[in-house]
Picture (spheres, rainbow, N blue to C red):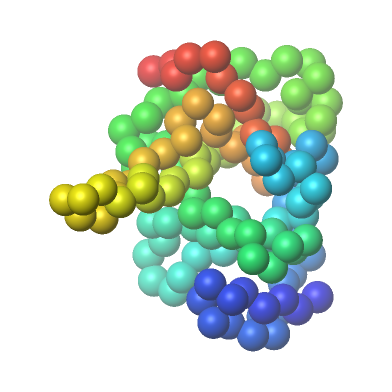
Length: 138
């Protein structure tokens, strides 16, 4: 499969099936988009990009939470682990979506993170979910 990534002006980028994550329930506000690929720019990755394969205009910036000094102890329900087909917790990684707050009169917006809805990815099954938290745990 090949995709175009308009945000980076990239055309005909091959997508290895081993790099595709499926979100059976989609992401909040984008439930119709189920398939994503995760990539980063060359060099030492800090920010990763979660590019929708269902909507070429949809791309999220994601980072590991420790980069933002966030620590999570996420409890997954049986339904969550079933959805992810997660049998070994070492196969799970957590990332958070980052975004730029709206610009103010004094300048550009600040970088913020959606810390209340981290993404949990099973690296073995290539399944993902957005876990809605009632409160941020640290």
